[in-house]
Image 1 (cartoon, rainbow, N blue to C red):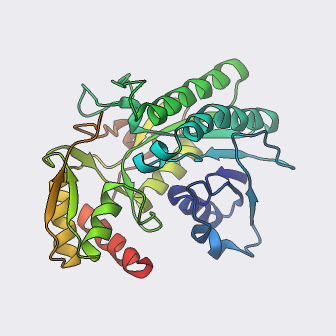
Image 2 (image 1 turned 90 degrees about the vertical axis):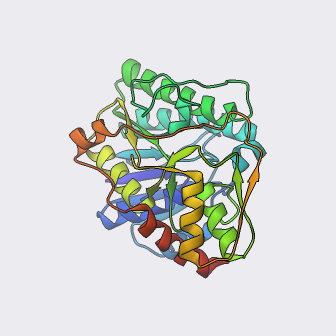
Amino acid sequence: MRILITGAAGFLGSHLCDRFLAEGHTVIGLDNFITGNPENIAHLTGHERFSFVRHNISNYTYIAGELHGILHFASPASPIDYLEHPIATLKVGSLGTHNALGLAKAKGARFFLASTSEVYGDPLVHPQTESYWGNVNPIGPRGVYDEAKRFAEAMTMAYHRAHGVDTRIIRIFNTYGPRMRPNDGRVVSNFIVQALKGEPLTMYGDGRQTRSFCFVEDEVDGIYRLFMHGDSQPTNIGNPNEFTVRQLAEIVIELTGSASKIESRPLPEDDPKVRKPDITRARTMLGWEPKVELREGVRRTIEYFRTVL
């Protein structure tokens, strides 16, 4: 297959380029580097089945030749990024998704939307199933990301129903691993970088809020399976093992051997108190579930950050 991946230089996008190439496909990567890192795809330079286009998918987009699949992963995805680039985040979720869907329709390509567990907002249902409509504050600071992804899901379903485009929607839960940016503001990278530098680990609130952390290798496997074998309905791909933020901080301190202490900071507005995917759909439809335990994944991520700091 000839595949277009938007956001190809990002954390997940770059790993997806690797996976699709490893499976024998031809990959066109597209990124404007607003949050992507050229180093993430530098190793693909010269690969006979990889090419790269520097472009903003929120603008008119044309790709010559046939396309069999489009994976739309372009978007700021951490709170630091989408609070710094609120309008770009809204545009890539709306205009970018529209452009990518129009291209998929024109090429007869399968369209794959990277959505997020953030569409559930601060959930009143636990764990979160795909049938839950969410509890989102549309005008809060996180609304620029949450509502961009909710709109993107609605647009994707509209193209599926009105134009017959073959679509997939994944709801990604917290993912971590090599190629995360040291300053991206996500909790795993924050804690690891602070621990390796001997700085206090900044924990927001009392640390009792929960998250479910999926190692990137598992996440990419779920994405690939969903692209190849899924259906048009949203599908949660994440790790259902739930940890408090304080537990994560303690694991990071232990595995880095750091003398860092934990410092509490005020909880950000609309920060979700719980986050845990129900992955029944992924298990039954795709035969997928995560394999890498948190301690092992964190250990491998620490090794990566030791090389880049």
